[in-house]
Structures are given as structure tokens and as C-alpha cells.
Length: 231
Figure 1 (tube, one colour):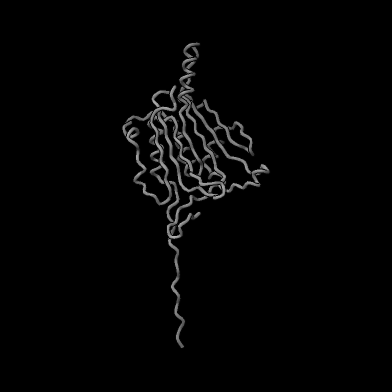
Figure 2: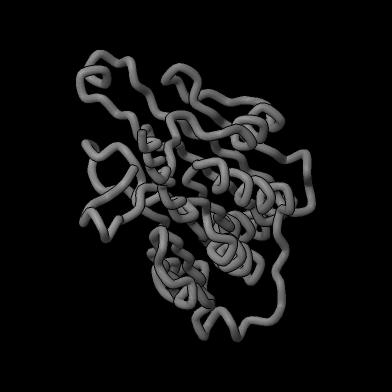
């Protein structure tokens, strides 16, 4: 009697690394430290029915004139899982900036941590507001405050359901935290609580961003062998 032949086990190949690339984080932080007015690192969506992000979008903007916020230099990177990271490099205008500008270190740290936790994050220097306030303060001999820096974190609901949203069962999750240069006590923080945007303590806002973003899911990738997206 012939012994049954053992069938070889089929071991599925490991999928690609779906984590946020360190190169994107490094480029975003470089833009923040070199003085960009606004830097955003967001998860790229396809449509409400797909239910997962398909990559990351990095945007940065720097203007030399606070009264002309739409002018100046821009950075845009669209990256997806498995794509070549050789294109994730600083543009000439950013690479030529060699001096760091003042930042709020806690907000930079939360920017990085929030992005890794699935939040869409944006770091902003409120330079236009500061220029206007400084002009008025000098005219009326008022104390001049430091430049305000802000961090906004928004959690996309990748499990969005139209029927649930119509009932009001699905609400957004947003956290906003701002701090002035030179005054760590000049802090304003807001967060969504059951659909209501309310003021919260600085520690509460930071703790939310340090947690995994609500309803976050892994970034999907394009599978050439199946000619389709894999969630």
C-alpha cells in the first residue's frame, strides 16, 4: 500500500508595508522647522463607498509675505504603498533653507504621532493674524504676543455609512490645539465630543491625538496580480 503523498503547504506571501513612510514624516517636519506657514499630512481617500485610504498626501506652503498668503513656494507629494520613495525629496526652495525657525515642539511631536495614529494632521503658523495684531498693538501701545502655532487633527470615518449618517449616528472627530511662542500658558484647545465642538484642556486634546484615530483602517494597496485594490 502506497503511503499518501503529502501536499505542500501554500504559504501566502506577506503583503507590502502599509505603514506611513518615515521619509514623508521627515520631509513634513523639515518643512515645519524651516518656516512653512502650513504643512499638512493627510490620508488620501478614493470615495465614500470604498472605505479605506489609498495613500498619503503631503502639502506645504511658504510665503515670504504674510499679507500675501496665497503667494510663495509649495510642496505636494502623493504617495501610495509600494511606490518608489526616491521621489520623496525636498524641492529646491526647501532644500536651500538652512536655518530652522522657532516651533512649538509639543505640536511637532503631536503632528508626527497623530499622523502615525491615522489622523489627518496640519501644522500652521498664524502669520497673517500675527501681522495684523502686531500692527494694531503698536498703534494702541498694547503688549505684543508671540506668533501663534496651531495643530489640527481630523479623523476620517472610513466606515462611513450613509443611513447611519442620516440618523445622526456618525459624527466627525476633530481636535484643534494652538500655543503662542514665548508663552506655554497661552493655549487654546478644542475637540469634538458627541458631535459638539467644545473647548477642552490642553492635556485632553493631546491625549486624543496620541490615541489611534477613531474608525482608522489600514491603507489599501494596488495588487498587480489581481488588478485591483486590496484593503
